[in-house]
Image (cartoon, rainbow, N blue to C red):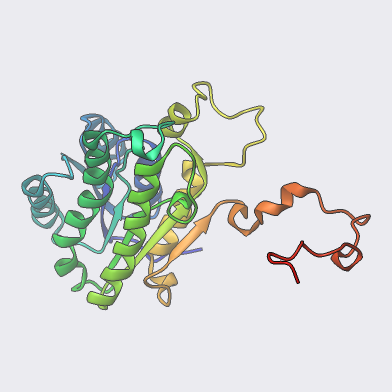
Length: 272
């Protein structure tokens, strides 16, 4: 399928590794021109590898929580490529894992919010005006299924991803010339998820439903491309149907289960 991204200009945060790197690879495959933003200098190696094969890919080391750095990176994209067509916000951190909400320090909480929420806000703030001048004009944020359901021991992460989802909706309303959508994946095999879940060697041999970063990148490019034009202000959930399942599924309903009418109702709260 032709995603109609040939010769478009894309900016990808978190593009040095994980899902962001997979999005960069996928965009290059579609013959897009890409600017990688990442706080890690490894982004330069990614850009160099693609350039050695003839692609137009550049890198600016950027802390997306710093407004001046974000503005500088966007200016670099405009100077280098002459415009912006699509922006993919893939940078994010998980923060403390395993701590109850009230056990999280204020510094830990603020750090997660700074990267996952403030970073994406700054990304939108400094790109929307250019995106609305493009025939493509799309902004895709990487949220999570944690934006839709709480996971024990991940309060800062879940809260931040919920905020990303509402930022997505708000931007789509305030800036209707730009299509803004979010991705809400389940478990993606990345260095961050391996660290969070204690799977240093990967997920082989587990029963966990896990997708590859390159699978998810395909979903991101679909939202970024003109072929998804009617889709705006919403989230694409990629979680193997996890959210469709009721928690009571664990109660093991079978064909031998009896109708509730066969059992007496609960005792009345007050004597009759």
